[in-house]
Image (cartoon, rainbow over all chains, first blue to last red; front, side):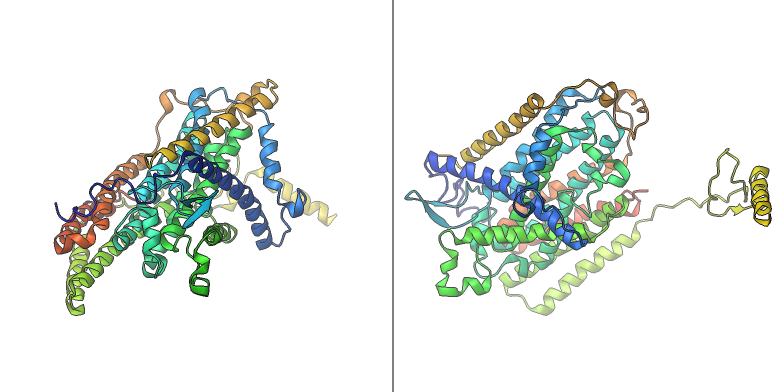
Length: 437
Length: 119
């Protein structure tokens, strides 16, 4: 085997798996509380920011300056009637929100939030656990979450949820591909899939800067992955009422939205870890006093700051952009993002290889050019699907009242004023007479 | 302790929270029977009868799912390759470019034949 000699037995990352049980318990509860608090904050934050963008005030009554609004909403939903529709598959219908919610708690388990700190005199890292395949773990958990939405749509026994569930499934798996491909560049540079290892490798330079295309592709796909505007087609109010959530009420409904907001935090945390240097302070601050702000509890502040910044980008997109049409949205994933990701991976790998092997620039350009040319010529050889010619409409004259009620003319049809029934003309005459009188 | 053990703890806490909140809302909410409320939502009109066995939906979703599987497998091969890239040298690069090329040919074929069009 090539190159697998270094750490074949390393099933565990150094510094993890040795915490006493009570430290683990504290961290588990801390992640749970952090997620819930961040979500309560994010919902009000989103409403306030969107309100500002639309020149409104936003929630400002419940609690100090309206910051308890989301807590009040959640409590209200808890005391609402829990409806299980007649047509629903009852077991799956109750299970779906649980399946959606539980995985969304798990991703923060492998996200590093800081270096070693001391909790009650015990040295430990600000990270619940780390795995040699931590990033793969986050992807796996994210895909389990999709089942929640799909099952919710299917089990409701109604048209709108089914359509919403289907859309959600197709959308999330498509954007998950692109998300997965955007990680490859990071692994290429970091040489590890453990999250703490990736953060350690970014001490000099953030991967968001050297792998800018990967970062941009990830930013787009994370919006698609979490079903957020402008990619919120599974719950497009104008088309599908509320998508997969149409038949849900009470706290089950709230659980889907909890899952959605948890997932926003999760993808932002992954973006922070993989592309924005994790818990490290941004450059001017990190240079102060010989890296004082990169030790102790300070990094938690930078980590949360970066996450909230990304959440703000989510909200900004929602406040600015209109929703896409579904076909355009799928085209964008399969025909734009996916080819770009593949080409970018080959390009990054090629550059990395050339750097490792010490090749000259001309040779790199030559080999790269050959590959691109072969691909382009190959794509031209495949015959395009023939679209059948549109049949010429036989009847060019158009009777707006043929079906009993008025309809607008189709393209190619001519509107004939003479065909308008007598009743309409009579009314017109009468109004003319009355105006004359 | 195993590195995966803390995740089990988090799963347990999350599951207790999720099941607990479903149960709590069932207990705490009011229960007033209303026949119309239990019907499927369809903008206030009588619900359309659902076809037996779930009915049919567009074949595009199957195509998307199948293409997804192909590329997901490609990603699974890409990850260990990317992690060990510096140790694999030219051989690893050529092998992976060949693999990506082999996947790309059917992808372009599907694209040009209209398999990715939503009409």
